[in-house]
Image 1 (cartoon, rainbow, N blue to C red):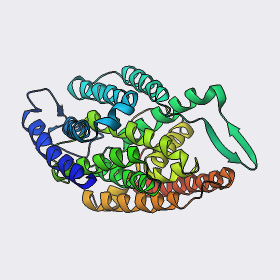
Image 2 (tube, rainbow, N blue to C red; image 1 turned 90 degrees about the vertical axis):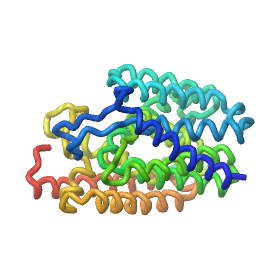
Image 3 (cartoon, rainbow, N blue to C red; image 1 turned 90 degrees about the horizontal axis):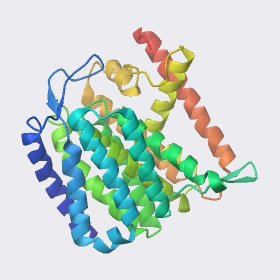
Length: 335
């Protein structure tokens, strides 16, 4: 049954993305290149509309009981998707997007999807108590925007998301969690169809309707997986967007710039230049890199002391920072 649903999502996603591609320009959904873009031609966006609708339609038809039992979650996903569509059409303000993501995270809380504790750090159990919801909001908004920032090359956000979702599908399969399996598997199928159009040279971008929705879905699946995985393992399962965002913000702060300013110093910009502007090779490298991190995260046992895992991840952040810093210096970039 699962396989039939996933095939249905793939086919419907391919069809709906094609429809969006053919009409996006007259709907006002066109990405105009700027000084940070890696593409040089006007390209339509909004493919997220196609793969989101394909997933929701198939889940509503074949898994309606699961949808109804997690209605708050699906309402939350819809709100994030909707503000993404508005942004694809007319560049919604960052404050509006943040507000909707925060509101949607509150809806997740109503469905029991919340980070209630962080695990045991050096023998001390860290329970969040009343701080559970604020911390969950911080984590969800942070990662949702981290995935949005990684969406800078043809096929990159889709490939990274598929790898991460495969990790969560594996967790759902291991622990017989149908919610995780249905949600992650459906979006894997939908994104696989999307990559047909988005692989370099892309004929359509996912837009914020896709990247914000995917970031939010990965966030909620990460929280759900905390029933089975240690907290810090999630940082490995979804490492590339997290590491990229952390390192870029640290570098901007150290250089006296706003941590939220825009530049061409993300990992995909640096590696693409290293690979002689070869986009597919860059995307493949980062996809494999993410797969290694995801596999590592899935090997970490639930009863492991989180303190040692945090030290391991911090070491990765430092190594990542030094490695990219050396490449930036060699490429003589202004970062």
